[in-house]
Amino acid sequence: MNASSHPAPVRTASRPIDPAAVRLRRLLVQLAVHAFLLIGAGFMLLPLLFMAVSSIKPPAEIFEATFSLWPRQFYGLKNFESALAMAPLMRFLMNGVIVCLGILIVQLAVAIPCAYALAKLNFPGKPVLFALVVLGLCIPVQAPALPLYIAFAQLGVLNTYFSMMAPFFLSVFAVFLFRQFFRSFPDEILQAARLDGMGEFEIVWRIVVPNAGPAIAAFAVFSVVAHWNDLYWPLIVVSDASLATPPLGMMFFADAEAGSNYGALSAGAAILTAPLVLAFLLARRRFIAGITMTGIK
Image (tube, rainbow, N blue to C red; front, side, top):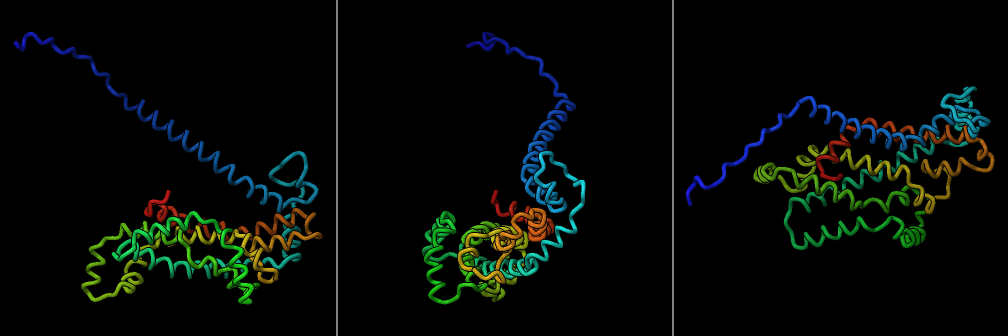
């Protein structure tokens, strides 16, 4: 077939891209995204804002029909003094620190070697073991509560720090999180360490752990927040107010006498919440880095 018989292609004039329009479009998208995030953050912060405002208001102003951020009569000192006088809030804080740190230390000591083995070692049954770890994420905390309570009662360890901490010493979420992080660790470094005569446990604690700071910080935030706010299990195993964690302590605090003093209740809640908020603000950069590096979205 003669090439001259083919019709000549029709050329359309390409429209030049306006850089200013592209920048404007990107700016509008970013503004929309940030506006959506700010609205969501505002809804999340509303309870904290109400708690903070109520802690500096007199009881008569807390449930007025009109809401104002700043009280007409500043009552903060009186509310905080009443909160500290009505309940041993510092004791509740110390109990929360002991329980959360005890759980976190044992969780890290157990989960890090397990996660390293699942990520970097080859052994029979490894896929089955990892499948069990994933299935463990589906089991709610409340499921083994009754048999654990019966076991602790028979052992006589109820009303102890151990009874509040022991069910959480093994965290399948920690194993899964660290396993995702360790998979990206360079195998060349591990091989070089093995050639130098280092054992696997030595490699874990001397090489892998010092480089796992972001993942450890991310899990530490998850663990501390979960167990600091946990009311279900301490309510079951603890009946002594001297061992109460912060959420359980607030139940002891809100008794028949203090129940009507909502200003003091809000002040007590602010005291018990402040350490958690401060810890998260201090660890937020490593928390975000750990979530990004482990691929947990």
